[in-house]
Length: 319
Image (cartoon, rainbow, N blue to C red; front, side, top):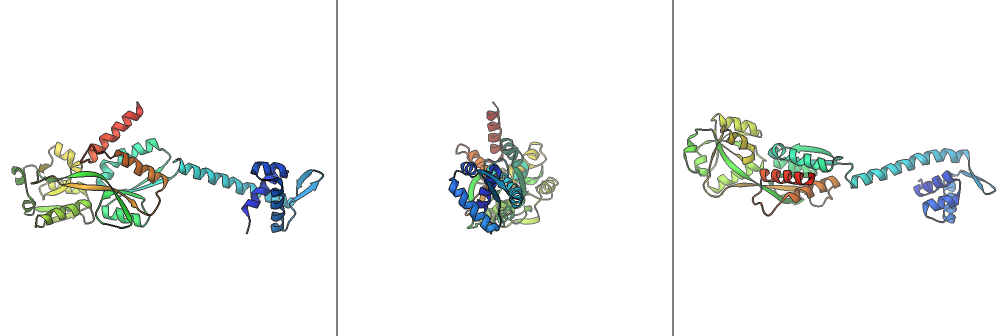
């Protein structure tokens, strides 16, 4: 098998046509160069140098090998530069997964800020059910996800990130709007439009009904939040969504919020990644960025609070 250390010594010796100069460039002794060249010529079973007086010359075979050695070592330098670029975040891929709500309302601003600070990183954003995104970590399809915790996996590290307030929504003029507050037993009497199985919202809603010893009367289930809002707006049923997803419709009075009895209900969102796998430099930089957004002074902190903090940081960095 070719000894690349010997090939490197040969390249420097052939380039300089001088063993002493090669030794100086390689930070080794001249006898070490001589020994390596003897070993390399023995391996090749070829004479690579000829000597006349104090002058060194390449043989035809030596010139041929020098051209190949030059190409190989040029690639070696390029590889070293690529490795350095990856460490310095001048090259690489950030593979993310998140819920559809976060993909729509939070990630555009978050990723544009990340890209502004680290412009050379290519970003791949996947969206879907919290359950699917979490399992994608196990298949190495995605490196970091921002999702609701729907399943406990020993291989996955969950870092609490934010809390999203859940809101009961109905059509304007719905009879439930006449109540000061509703219970889950009240909601169980209504046709319910539910998020799909595997979503964090679905798991939280089902748990909330179970805690109240009742079950939802599911009319329809879908992964499409916009479709849910349209159905509710038309009076087809009631639903339970994160506040940020229906903030515009509430403001425009296309949907109505019905207060729940008892304390507010929040969907816990986490940053998740594999425990025993080192994060790539882009993924580590992204996780560090998200972690810095967390604040003990904002509790609970939802998408709106996060976006306010990001905008504030961008303003501070530009002044």
